[in-house]
Image (cartoon, rainbow, N blue to C red; front, side, top):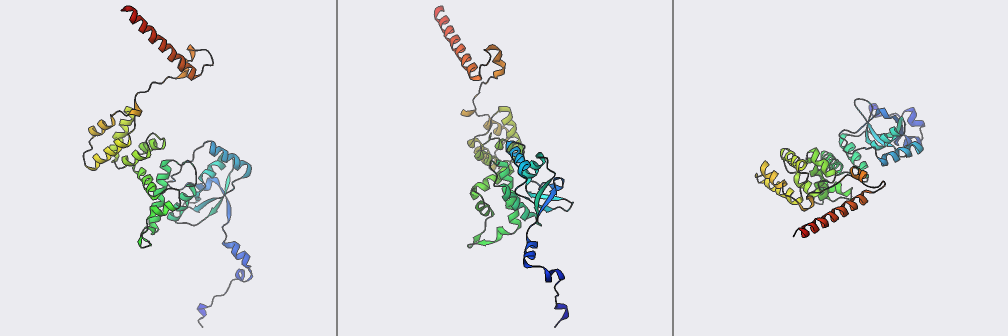
Length: 305
């Protein structure tokens, strides 16, 4: 027998119980200083200090962080948050100095997939958040080689795999990813619901320079492109016929839902009405006065005849 092949058990292995060995394999929860927790690189989800976050902060102040975050060690020191960005911010608002986390050793692709999946459960995600998170997960899955594996004799599609873990179809995921090709200010209009999803997808095929010209038109004319206009712009670009004058001409077309609107600020008229008048009461009074003035002008014209 080769002596080199003989493996002697250590003292700990000889006298350690199976329960202790199993416990050693379980993930441990660590209390880590908030200053040691750093955001995930290019984290696509926004953490805003709104009522929902303040409620979470109050809950954490009363009961602590119920679900630990997930982190991995950083080469530069400290830990990179994979899951738990909102919990960390809420913990800061609650006045805590540490947060419970589970430390995992993960490569970039595995960490990205966990980060996206853990945040996709949130409600009211913005289109931009879905767009960049889906794109990040898609690229991570491709890096892992899943895009070249076979499934029932056909090429495995990563967008289909992503769809299986969400309520979205593969087609919808593709459309969201198209939004990442929009310039930031146009994508912001999508988040603000000024531009709908369908025209936004069509506009994503325009080069950045043409998107910038389009954005200037939107600001100057206080309008946004309809689906019909967006499709025409895309077709003209694809056929090499989209010039700046043509783009401006299309965006200058008036749409039924973008006719001039006349609005008044209630505070500018408050001095002319009894105290406590609502904006609706002011509006009704102004309309009534205008109606009476119109009738008086009509009578005057009739008398002049």
